[in-house]
Image 1 (cartoon, helix red, strand yellow):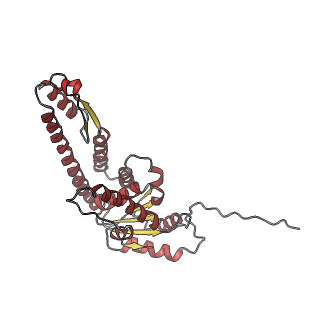
Image 2 (cartoon, helix red, strand yellow):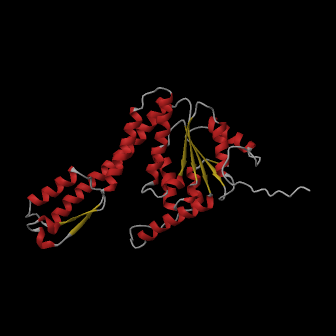
Image 3 (tube, helix red, strand yellow):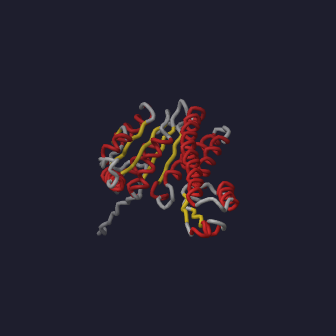
Length: 295
């Protein structure tokens, strides 16, 4: 007599097809290899429906000379800026591909340094200067000014030194000086974005074209809604270049609700401003603007 066997289904992702995904895999791999770029593909499904396995199979079916990046969004959910971790992951994949081909990697390192420089600017944001500690006229004011996006090191030191050396300056004038410094940082941030877009497109043309960069983003729906939206927006803002394909595994309903929550909060903040009209954003339509093909 043979004892009955108990079979336990393993729910770990796999690139071996046990769920008859092959027709979908072949179709998606063909679209990724031949569709007009830039192209974003959404693999929609609830948790545990096999999105990761499907994407792993698609990855396996791509031409060997394609550059592939894989980003597990959930692993980086605790990062202060998920979009930056995402961009670094893409640059790392490009750099490793260049190294394998014996190509120079200096340009990738410069791009990474651009991202780290932006990080340094943000890290020192929210610095508070206590004007009472600057002496002179400020000692009477007992005023604290919070600085956002003030650069660290020399720039901040020069600002403090200038305030200290001009003790007769009014608090209002000091505030204006700080506001001017903030404006410079905003300009730097815009320039950084433009520089990154331009440099990334050129790198793709030099190191990838006429082949393709295919970026898989997994578990986006397990992240906090605002973090997931960061990645979606980073694709459009930074990486929207020819020869680039993005394949996103997500639960459409979860992400759509997150989008609606985020923009509802922004609308409520503007509600008290008569000059602004209250607005709403439909999450599904927002996704449609980013994702061109759905599986």
